[in-house]
Amino acid sequence: MATIGFIGGTGPEGLGLAMRLAMAGERILIGSRRIERAEDAAQTVRDAVSAAGGTPDAGGGVNRDVVEQSDVVIIVVPFDGHEATLNDLRDSIGDKLVIDAAVPLTMENRIPGISDVPQGSATEQAQALLPDARVVGAFHNLSARKLQKLSDPMEGDVLITADDADAKQQVVDLVGKMPDLRPIDAGPLSMSKFVEDLTALIIGMNMRYKTQAAVRMVGIDD
View (cartoon, helix red, strand yellow):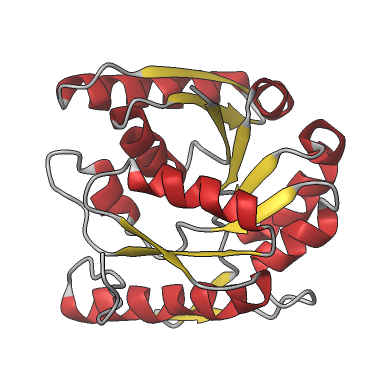
């Protein structure tokens, strides 16, 4: 069983993904710059998964230790810390499989938007900063609130982008372990911008309709 490490895993999206993957039987490590926050987050995951009837295997540590102990690294840091975090962890990440779920989201007058990224998208920035890593974009469009509510099923598709076919398939297989979510091959890394942009649209709709809408591609067989 692979160990999945979360960088930025103390935030709502990271916690939710960690809970869902722990429910699926994966070994989880939560990373933070402060070990106390990481350990508190890991306890939150253990408590939630246990309450939902799962058997959690979740621990916490500082970011660098988590990266070095993980087979798969999921990046869920706020975008304003994305570049600095990846630069700091580049040597530890090496050629690992990296799933980037960061979104360059902005909010002005309660209207969500997407900031410009020189590389095109957060996922492409990750690949540029981590040239040896196998970077895959995924999990951008999922509601953090819904992820954390383990009593409710998830719904929707996970749009996956990558240039490395083997790395993409590993993420497809990982998503396939999460009940009620469907992995969708969304193309190469150059398509990541459009996947990330959808997040702003979804958040705006959720604010407007007071719900937790999700992406679902019709016309594609399960």
